[in-house]
Length: 122
Image 1 (cartoon, rainbow, N blue to C red):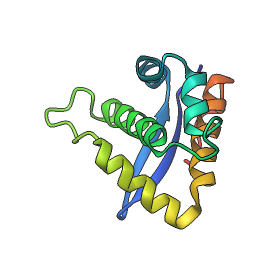
Image 2 (cartoon, rainbow, N blue to C red):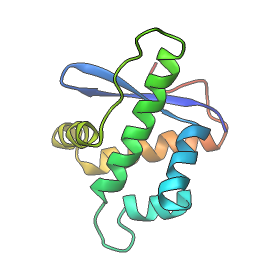
Image 3 (cartoon, rainbow, N blue to C red):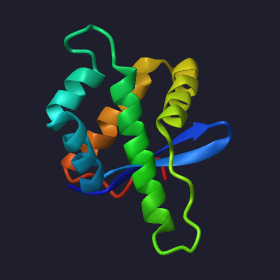
């Protein structure tokens, strides 16, 4: 597994998203397995993507990137809340569609789990 980064713009601010072991750990704490989260996020049972699961993953990825960037700084940046993650998703979906959110997350995780390139969108 390799730390892979992407970016998401929200209200004119660029948020980095990273997938690494800490994000995978958070997903496993919340859903039990990565596979269960993916099934829920992609709507395998319901036929529609789960905004709750997508927002959870976006918040976990954004917060991990913030933690990494502000590690050791006197005043760390404020972490992304669930509501902010939902707003970020809403803006992204309005511009690109829900399928692109799913693809962004899927590509980021797949590249990381396969050992990835250096980083994405940099």
